[in-house]
Length: 302
Ligand SMILES: NC(=O)c1ccc[n+]([C@@H]2O[C@H](COP(=O)([O-])OP(=O)(O)OC[C@H]3O[C@@H](n4cnc5c(N)ncnc54)[C@H](OP(=O)(O)O)[C@@H]3O)[C@@H](O)[C@H]2O)c1
Image (cartoon, rainbow, N blue to C red; front, side, top):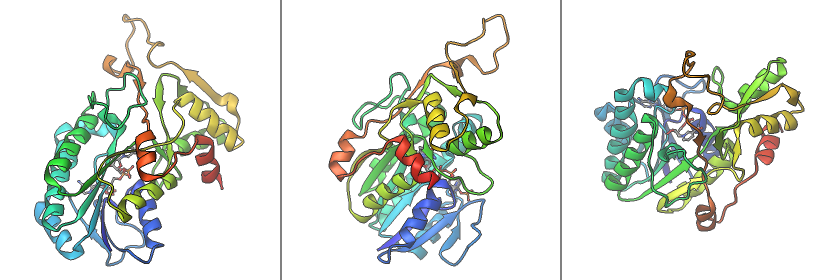
């Protein structure tokens, strides 16, 4: 089976590629944009997703049976600061990839996000109505619609915070907490920000199932624990045997300074951020299980 991973040079792509390379059934073609991998070989192609001619060439060379689309402006703040660019990359790019998938009779597995939901209550199910309130979330929702409209065979994967050892020179949540606590620095864990964090190896294992067999529709792949960022940081401290007293609970929404004082963040960013995904339907459909944060962190430690 020929697989094309668009955005393989990113965090999730790195782990997905490593997993697929261990399976002899797959011939994998990969793309990067600005960060060429250290072990680059002829399976890698440089791609700017908004360059439709280049995208055509990549498809022609890869002749994929399955495409995994990871490429995106995946950072909420970056998408907020450069909204037009985020729309071009995340929405127009996804739509063009979906069209090419139809043309090549390829299945599309598209990575979306819990940010398609509003963040008012958390634990969203697959069939809950999206209502994004960030530009990033809007681009992912519009991309989902484009994928469903343009691709003839598609699976959409929504996920939550993904943690694991980051790529060199990059950061992610668990690694940041570990580094701070190891350096005896405090970590402020927001008690109003809820997620269902998933270990990157668990996520990529489940994505491989969607690559191997066609499961159409929308899937939620996330961890079993719906927890706030203070609880997550405490779990990191416990599993990695670091000083948990350095983790401080902060209440980003309720600890707002009085209006007369200057706000550090724009007021609209001070809302409770209650996301997280309920994966029950997906787990039954795919025959998989979601793992706890402690299990994921223990595997990360090992
Ligand atoms: N990580 C999470 O917690 C999380 C949570 C929910 C959903 N997701 C979704 O999962 C996907 C992968 O996330 P990630 O964490 O692996 O992100 P990442 O580490 O930032 O990687 C993004 C990938 O997209 C590529 N890319 C960016 N702009 C591009 C462009 N204009 N043209 C072509 N390629 C471009 C990057 O290439 P270069 O690095 O070479 O420039 C990289 O390979 C994204 O769609 C994201 O929205 C991630």
